[in-house]
Image (tube, rainbow, N blue to C red; front, side, top):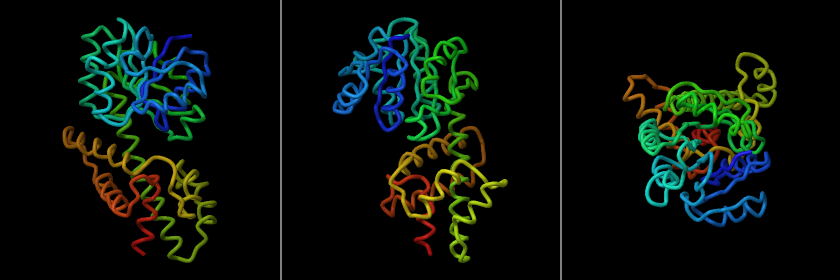
Length: 290
């Protein structure tokens, strides 16, 4: 078993850190809001720290799952950052969805400090984190990945190295691009069914067994038809992710017309007050349009 630090106890990080502790690892947690770390320790055991540096001291692996580029920089760099506390040869595993730019920056800083760095964004949502069945897409040095993979397995259904540093983040962008189109397509199908006087549940029961079937259809159609969106991956976070995708497409020349359009639809949902709604709330937008 390993000595670990986990930085960031949001809806994903909280259960992920819990799986690590349940597997017998020695876990120290850090969260910007200390009350969450206190609650985690009360539930799972382990220990809490007041700074990322303190949490990372002596750890073999430091895992992070925070909000965005700036949050990640804040927990990694500076006098109180994790990199200052990590021992030589330790590996930092970043589960945050961030830009490839900040990944390159932090990978270089880690190398300079004699540390390993694996970008390992995740997919599967809060339910996947709680059940320990996330999909983890990784980039980084093969040796560092091989060290980290058995640790990541505590909460992963699949974990795969896609390539060198940054490849994990690029793969997560592919994931979000695909989801954006799928959710819009499902929303339009359900909207069309309603406008046609069809029973949406009956429609999904049939079409989900054919080529139209998807995770989104299986797991979200019921709540969409019920108008329930207070769960799952928030629109605000999806827009952050799609912004990263679109910025990167400007750099690499990829054409993402559907992604750009759906991003604007999510902007409409935010204007409806749905910034914290689940991404399936694209359906609510269509219902509002009539």
